[in-house]
Image 1 (spheres, rainbow, N blue to C red):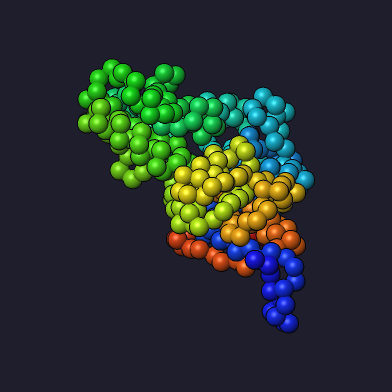
Image 2 (image 1 turned 45 degrees about the horizontal axis):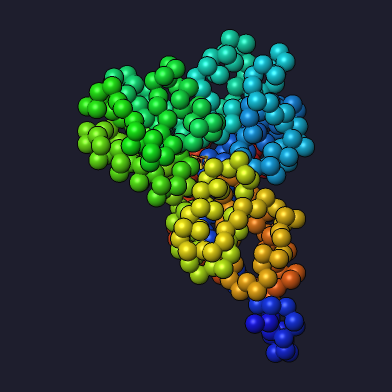
Length: 330
Ligand code: SF4
C-alpha cells in the first residue's frame, strides 16, 4: 500500500505505515525525579555535580547531563575531597555507600527511586523478623546490588530463574520471604513466584508487588499493541532492564520482531521493508525526544499515521530531596 497525498488524492509514492504508539511509555516518576535532582543541583550549586553510576540507564540522558557539568563515577573513591554534591543514582546503593560518604563528610543527594527504597525497607524489616530472604532479580544489576547490600553478606539469596526457584533449599521453609527487583517481567516473575509458593506454601510475599507501577504499565501497553504490529521498536539503552523486558514482552505477546533502539541513527531500514504496522514504546529511562526523532525518521520514508494506544494514565510524582525544594523547576 502506498501513501495518499490527501490534498490531491494521488499516491506520493511513500508506503503507508501505521505507528501504534504505546502509552504509557518513557520516563517514570523515579527517573524524572533523579534527572531533576542532577539538573537542580547543577543550577543551585554549580558544576561539578558528582553522580555515582549512570543516574538512569540511558546514554542520551547521561551525555546531556555530562555536557551540563555532571561528572559520572562508579565508586566514591574516584571523587576528590570536595564540597560539591554527590548524587546516588535512581537504582539505589548498598548501605556501605552512604556510610562511606558520611565518613568523608560528603554532601549527598540521594536520587534512589522511592519505590526502590520501599523494597530496601521491606528487606530490612523481614531480616529483623528473622526471615531468610530471596530476591528475584538479575545478578549484577545495580538495583540488585543495592538491595542485597542493605543486609549483611549472605543474608539475601538471588533467584534469577524458575530453575533457581526449583533448586533453592531453605534453612527453614517456615521462615522464608521473597522480594523482587522493580523492573522485572511481570509474567516471568509470576511464574517464579508460583514455583516458590507451591514449594513453600508459607513463604511471605510482598503485600503489593515490588515490580513498580511504571514497569507494569509499560508492559501492559506493549501487550495491547504487540499482536497487531509487524515490528516493535523499544526506545532504550542496552543496560536498561525495563527496556530489555519490553522487547521480550512484545515478542511473547505476538509481535514477530521487536528490537531495542537507542536513537534514530541506528535504524536498519532493511528490517522495515514491507512493514505496514509498527509499534513504538520507550523504557522508563528513555526521553520522549528520542521517540520523536525515530517517528520523524519514519515520516521521511513512509506515509505515517500515528495511533496512540493508551492503557493507563499516570500522575505519580515524588518529592525532591529537601536541599533542592527551593530551586524553581526549569
Ligand atoms: Fe522507580 Fe519504577 Fe521508575 Fe525504577 S522504573 S525508577 S522503580 S518508578
